[in-house]
Image 1 (tube, rainbow, N blue to C red):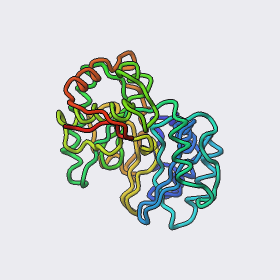
Image 2: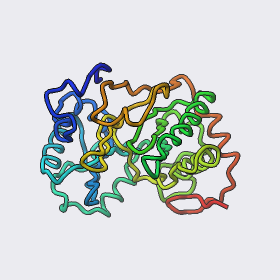
Image 3: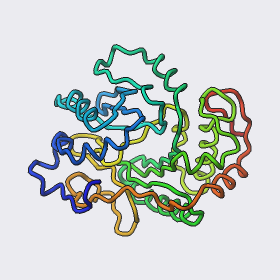
Image 4: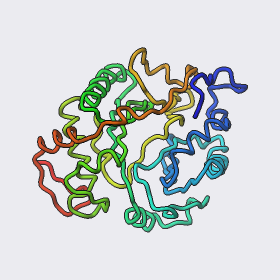
Length: 292
């Protein structure tokens, strides 16, 4: 764990520098914890392309990838991890971006998912809307706390991620099917829950994150938009005193622990409320749901 008092401004490097941040061993060790049996995806923001299905078993693997891919000045990348957890050995550990068959990897990934977390992604269309968006995130947090829903809450760089681990939500779904091309799959149910929350709380809840390939920014990584616009994906344990600019890499002096809120709770009432409000037609597609 990164000590809460770890102060970037006191490190012996220019803390606006993207590369210097990932040179810190304490940062790489924290990020590596999120990648066990999950995909590491590297996304180039300014020249969009994604390096997908990388396997990072430990801190050494992550260090190897970062040294290989981001040491070039042109490679300022965002780091993502998969919402899916895979069977061990299902991913790739190759450096060669061109040597793998993307369609084959997608097919292989779909067949080897063992868990899939629920993500509620609230995404601001601009920096100016981040403050009003915070009000919506507060309301969702209060709603989850009232229902005793277990969740992680993180600032994403342009919004907020609520993540409910698979083990806390799966037992309350009517059926559980992790294969994306089957009826009543888990991604369909997750889309219904998100639709319910979108209608209740915020139009900025993204509805395009409910299929088996989706990823989220890794906590404690840098959310990069350009050379100066760099925010750290930090956990939020309370909205008291929160302001997005405190998450900018040049302003971070405190690293909160990524805690599971309401760990003794469950998702029973959330799932019941969401599914009872949904009128759906299930069909055999990777989404699995058509909205009336």
